[in-house]
Length: 285
Ligand SMILES: NC(=O)c1ccc[n+]([C@@H]2O[C@H](COP(=O)([O-])OP(=O)(O)OC[C@H]3O[C@@H](n4cnc5c(N)ncnc54)[C@H](OP(=O)(O)O)[C@@H]3O)[C@@H](O)[C@H]2O)c1
Image 1 (cartoon, rainbow, N blue to C red):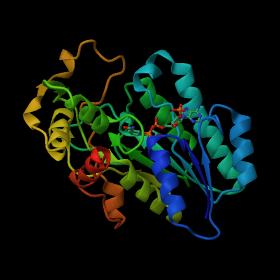
Image 2: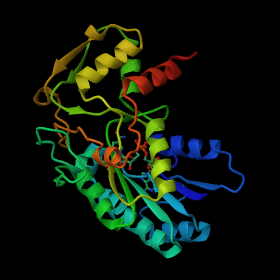
Image 3: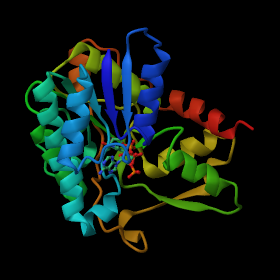
Image 4: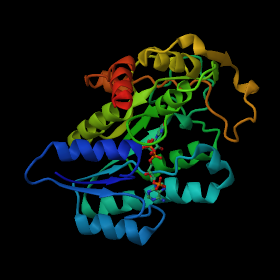
């Protein structure tokens, strides 16, 4: 396989590059395109890189993911997430590469009473969500679009790392109980991105680990996995956050993996399985 991974320095990108390299296939060419190598907002850089490598698959993982900063840096968010994805899709069409684009639960407004499936109408409430939806629109009908949520992994800042660091100090912590979602672990997600990319499956897929929880309940689970006392976390409401976050979060982020299930593809594990794996990795001396 000849493949390019965009955003190769991020938490999902690094896992995916490691997974691709670990396959150790003799003829594989894996190009890890991080921010410094290929700025997604730079059309010449994107077309130049992809057209010279001539990959079979482009795993487009890179994005401007600072959700709150997107509110005040909207032009930059659209330049990277929406227009940048248009550049990637354009290059893929020129070389006949299959595009796998990673999108987000933030394309939904979070008001639905039940989990979101792939055929629900998006209605993003934040600049980040709107810019990522703009990326989806740029992909074209043949691309694979993978929406995921609440990503944690070995690399980069995420909730598991934050909680383990906070738990090293005495005292209680507060997390919101009125936002629910599916925690997703970068290594499991990378495996499914690879699978869908190899299969060249077109269309939208929700890909998350199983088990819907609030952030408060997720932090309880992290503390339990770390052998700590889950009573150290207390629930608060989003309205009680001080200061309030600039970008609105969907109250219901739960993505039902309907398309995977109906396609007969094995769903990812319950989140407690990769959570235990990640906590023991992070706690290892
Ligand atoms: N994290 C989540 O909870 C979550 C949830 C749903 C969907 N997603 C989506 O999943 C994908 C992977 O997220 P992640 O958690 O791995 O995020 P991440 O750790 O922030 O990785 C994103 C990578 O993209 C790079 N990037 C940013 N601007 C760029 C630009 N202009 N040109 C090239 N690269 C650029 C970043 O590099 P720098 O850091 O050097 O700028 C970073 O390495 C993203 O598409 C994101 O939208 C994430």
